[in-house]
Image 1: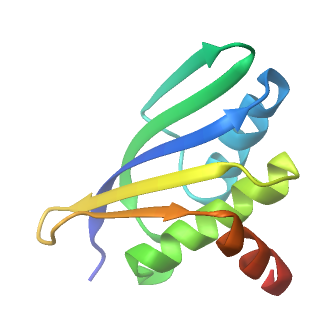
Image 2: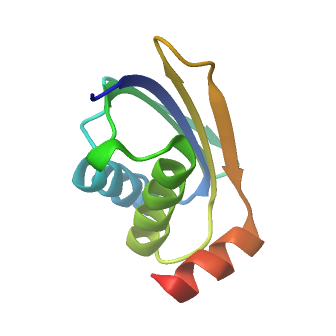
Length: 110
């Protein structure tokens, strides 16, 4: 049974030219965000997006966070902080923040 999730992503720091790359990675690897917010401070951007959709192949929340983070890192071409907050109707929400150690480990295997 597929489960729909409400997902909020925060991605930072991004350069202006990397905003579209991160959005493209999200669209290609999951879905089109329902809302997008771009915050700029000193030429560094925080990208916040939200969407409601199911995960591919009934993935766990952790596997989804890892897959989406890898897609973003590959498209941007470097490490950026990715925070994934996923909530479904019948499960408590989970928040995943992948750090630079996760980046090195996951990029070696993908």
